[in-house]
Length: 216
Image 1 (cartoon, helix red, strand yellow):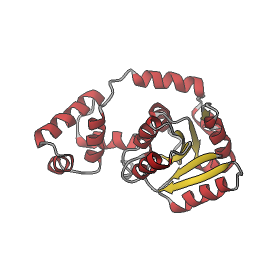
Image 2: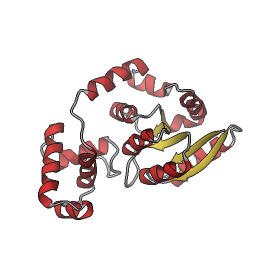
Image 3: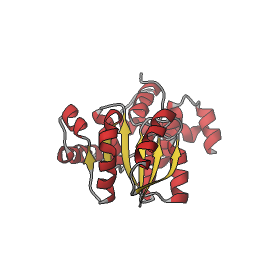
Image 4: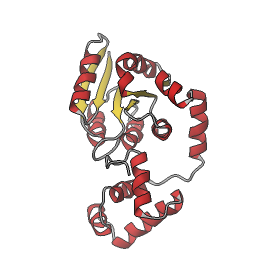
């Protein structure tokens, strides 16, 4: 049996995915959650083989959750309403093994799950057609992106909190840091990403799926 967890903040979508997968004899739905943080917590306890993961969710987004699930040995199948090249690259870069558009999930999801369980990568045909890319070009784009300097885990955390509208004082209090340390981390993030203000940081965080704030 393939143990599957479904993570999507839209209840109707999530229930639809669960019903679709429950009809498959060799798939066992072990959990359904509405945000990335819950997905990581549940995965640590239940150890699913596959997580079907939305990208933009409240709290921890799908990209950061995928990074953490990869460390737990969970294969991630990404689902999105957005056929955006950046989302595709960032999800695979975070460790996802498949990427599908939600409106094609009914036809492609089971096949994608079986593919990743067998150790294969899967890119939905609609993504390939819409973006003019395939798995080989995706590897090139990921390698190109990896040449950029990585943010540290603390910097990713502060980037998300900044994007959620938290003040320096609030971030310092929630992370038990000094305000000066928070400011230093924020400046480091801006330097690494070549961004120049909080608005730019927020837009970047949205593109990376760190927050469900409306696109600016």
